[in-house]
Amino acid sequence: MKRLRAAANGMQIGAEWLTSALLLATSVVIGWQVFAGKVLGSRPSWSEEIGRFGMIWFGLIGAAIALRQGAHIGVTFFADRLPRVARRVVDHLVSAATLAFAGFFVYFGALVVRQFMHETSAGARIPMGLVYIAIPLAGLLMALFVLLPQEHPETSGAPQEADG
Image 1 (cartoon, one colour):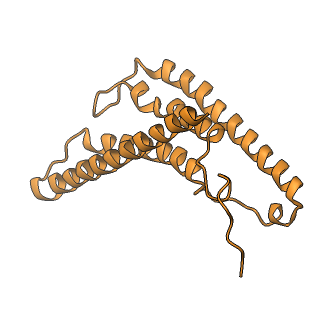
Image 2 (spheres, rainbow, N blue to C red):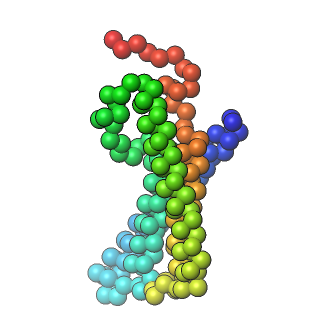
C-alpha cells in the first residue's frame, strides 16, 4: 500500500507541475495575444484557442489535485452532527459517488476523445481529441486520488493534540 500511495503522491506532484506549466504557458499566450492586438494591430489566429485549451486542461487537472488535497467545497453541516459511525458511512458514500463521477469522466471522456480526434481546431489546427483527452485523464487522476487519499496527521496514526 505504501508503494501505491507513493505512486499517487508522484502523480500528484506531476499534475501540480503540469498545471503550473499550463498556467504559465496560458498566461504567456494570452499576454502575447493582448500585445499583438493592441500594439501590432493583429492577433494570431491560434492564440485565443490555445489560451482556452490551456485553461480547460488547467481546470480539469487542477480539480483532481484539489480533490486529493481535500480543497473542494464540502457541505458538512449535517454530516458533522452525525454520530461518528454514521459520519464514516456518509464519507464512504461521498467517496463512492465521487468514484462514480470519475468513472463517468473516464468512460464518456474517452468516447469524446475518440469521436473528435480527427477534427481540428479552427485557429490552432490541432486535433480536438488532444484537447478533450484532459477529461478522461482528470477522471483517472480523480479515481486514483479517491482510492489513495493523502495521509493527514489525524488519519495516519499520529497522536492527536487535545483541544484546550
